[in-house]
Amino acid sequence: LNNYSGVSLWYWSSPQTAAHRVNDKKRVILKVKPYLTEKAMHSKGSKSISGASLIQYECLNLQFEGNWSPMLHVNVSLVGKYKYMLQAPLHNIEVPVIVDIVLVGRTKVISVHSPYWVYNRSDRDLVFRLQQSLGYLNAPSSQM
Image (cartoon, rainbow, N blue to C red; front, side, top):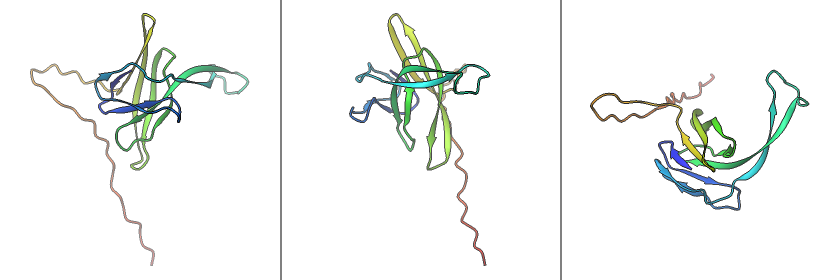
């Protein structure tokens, strides 16, 4: 599991397993076995339940450092790129997170990262930070 998210994250499999920390820019070998879940996959253009087929895949749960809700049922077995929305309910914002699963030999490599890529072609070191606008809190209007 590679963490390129910009913050530390924790992963776990079930409520009975302990959460394991992965610091930003670190790689670890999973210490828990992912759990199986099912998801209905619809064929393109089909809206009926009868047209859906069930697919089983392995999942983990992720918790990012900060005021974020946990991301539950994150696919860690089907090769591909998957977008999840990381939610901060207190501030009513969402930011996208990409989970990239590639097969290297017989090993699946899972990378968690931002969908944004900044490439610095200048001769200066730069530091970037994405900041979400939280807006302003307005006091409720009084009725007289």
